[in-house]
Image (spheres, rainbow, N blue to C red):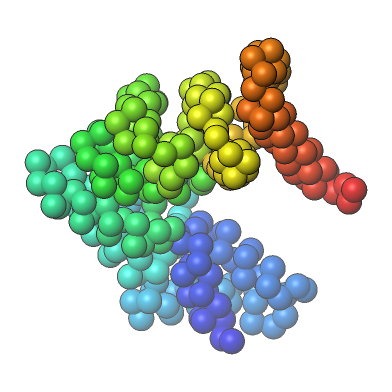
Length: 281
């Protein structure tokens, strides 16, 4: 594969990156760097691709508007030219969300889902999605998928209080029919990412609705897959008291579910911790 192809492939996967980061990434693919992979050679390849219109240096305004980190005020970013044009389309969709056209809003959110990790939104842009969440169940479903995607990358809406309030409202408006569905899973994930106690309240409510062993297994898998393990372990004392209360009421099946989900949450966190420390067992 040519150097030019490696540059384009890296940008296709990772999106806009600092020029220095891109150079190190390409050189890391060829350790020790062989002929043709010096910094000077890579800079020449960048210049050739820029002249061909394949890649583009972001302007200072684009770095600021797109929300890329620029702690020293000297950040130089490179991205695929097509990605920058796509970003302009994405920004126009976000700007249009404040219209009262619900067809535009739903179609725009589906377009944002289509491009997935191929773009970046700022916290302020995410606020525009948050404003619409309680308007319609379909909009809530699309919006939550986008918000979860960015939360997984550490990017959250700017107005946290409104964000959380709308998540609470979604639970009440659109998630009462079943304890397990995609929309509720995304709400639980986002609340868990914000260390919100409403996750524990929701878990306790759902456990009280359990009728069968299948229901119990479903609830356990649902909350753990929705990222609730840290909150479950953090609230160990409250859930311990909840288990005792259920056993006093002869609700042993429900109490067993509390015990099982606490054990699974703890074991999962321990496994992750040991893996991060390089412990094999």
